[in-house]
Image 1 (cartoon, one colour):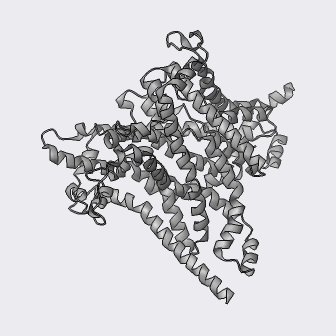
Image 2 (cartoon, rainbow over the protein chains, first blue to last red):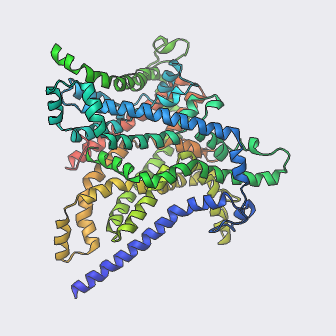
Image 3 (tube, rainbow over the protein chains, first blue to last red):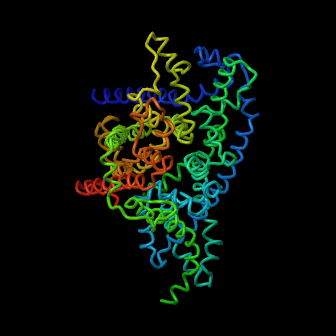
Length: 296
Length: 297
């Protein structure tokens, strides 16, 4: 009797659980799906609530305007440049620094680590950082996007613990016996073994660089340097860029509608690259978080 | 000793760029923080500006803005802290999904929004919550309810901010707990099944206690950021109509400091914020230790 009711309870639990997650899937997917179908449906029908599951009266005018806009292309170009250069810069620092700090025989490694950890919990803050970047002449240059905020202490710890548990001490000792220097050891032995962690770090930093807007907001006044996120902010949130996108000869109501299409389209155009690539790269991201959790 | 240094100079060269980075871009601003106690004038420089003691701090504590931004910051922080268990619960439930493929699907889908930029998230909020065309208000209208201009209502600000954050990050937050759950010894569950424990009992008495150390560490870390609510998102969500509940300490620092050029005053406010964060972190860590839980150090 008891076993019977228990298994029935468990079954009920399993089914409720499945229903619950089906609901969750709907809540996560639907807004994204809606954005996609709304971006090429007739705005009147979208605004009237008629486009809920199936795109209607397909119109590509939103995308035509988006791809015809010089500011958006320029934003794309800048974002790609900042993302590539920034990721290379960040990952190089994190990997070389993380490796050196992982070596138990590095004199003062403990003290240095402590000094680095301290900055995880106490910062100079926005204003002193801004004044420093300005003092260094980085304002309105691409360096302001690449250098400040480059090394995350958290990532440095992840990389350090990866090296601590993946580069055997015996390997180092054997190499040193053979007269192999530290540089050579790092290049020939450590780097080839650290491809997984490099992949993880590249992904995390590339996504962060691609999505960042605040650094550009405070350091870049020159519009020609603006990354895509700043252009997006104007179109989606401040809506002032609409003025440029809107055809001056068209009537206002028509243009108002097109601007809605442009907004939906911009969400798709800016997020799609990341969201399409993400399922293929998911396991690397998850791995990154898990390496961190071992020694957080 | 000399020999030791000689042997390690290559290691130091590897470390040098990172050390320089921390010296300049982390400790540089900490050095620059002294302007919080000065009356900073750009042409005099940091060291040349006159000391004014705690004037900037006192001015902030006395200003009518102080209570506004403090209350707004705390409202959002406490609200977020109350929702801290959501990823824990989600992870416990995902862990119970029996179909491997469905589990995988749930994970892939719920992690995805984490990769959407803040600008896009706020843009989506504006689109969905728009008073005329937003899908939410259309729904309210169809149901015969009154439409609400969500983004313009100060009362709605904290809820929109916090729940859109849950939508974006709750799935991602489960990863660490799911990892902790996989390291539970399966024998525990097997013997519990033999003893006739139901799934819910096993979640409560085996899974939850097993991941508690991880939960505590993450809780401590999140308290360490208690006062720095995701201000980039707050700033994007602000508009003249909702600003009365949308001005948090960090956005106030940005506005007075960089837009208003009151460097010393805003540096002082920022410093106040960091110190409160630090104290909270130390306090929670102390409490966690005291109660025999896992702690950061």
